[in-house]
Length: 142
Image (cartoon, rainbow, N blue to C red; front, side):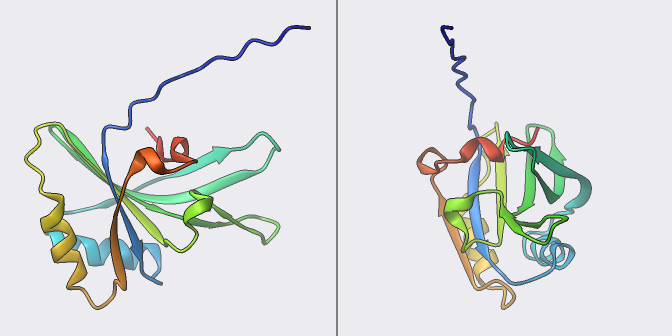
């Protein structure tokens, strides 16, 4: 039987920051809120279903803006059987990701990096190129 593949080109119209910060998710959201003077709010956990019938449940915090959003995603999830799964497996060293979408192009990501780097809770902040991430489709949570 002949197989047909559906190719979908998803828009990745957001900036991505990666964090190394061994903190609980609510503490990380609090640190980001204080550093950037924003108000990330916990939203429903994101559940990603895989083909092998396993699921990945990721905590997320969001703030909706008029022309975009900010979203904090935890990279690591503990399954019901006790195994660890990653939202982006090739970036296991990252604890969190901050997705920044600003359709008005007023957002200065370098200012965000500078302000977040001053926090003693965050060990490292890295701007990531979404197009170079192999499992970037996992970041499409909307």
